[in-house]
Image 1 (cartoon, rainbow, N blue to C red):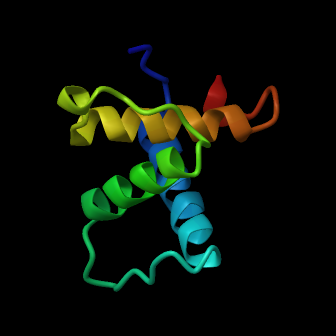
Image 2 (cartoon, rainbow, N blue to C red):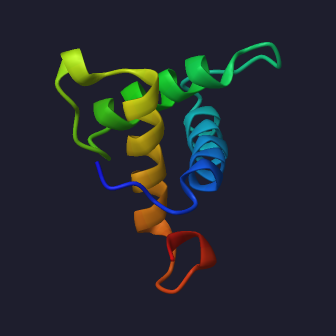
Length: 86
C-alpha cells in the first residue's frame, strides 16, 4: 500500500464525503454516537456495492486497509495539484 503524506486528512475528508453520499442516497442515517470505524466500514461496503470502488479480499478487510482505501478513493476525486495529494 502506497501511503499518502496526508493520509489522515484524506481519510477524514473521505469519511465526510462518504457519509454525505450514503445519507444523500437515503441508504442510512448515521447517529452522532456511531464510531468513525463503523461509519468507514459502512461507507466502504456501500461504495463496493454501488461499484464505485473495487472490493478487497475479505481477509484483507480491516480498519487500516479500509481507511487507506477510502483515502485513495477520495484522493482520486481531488483536482490535480491539490495540497492533500502532494
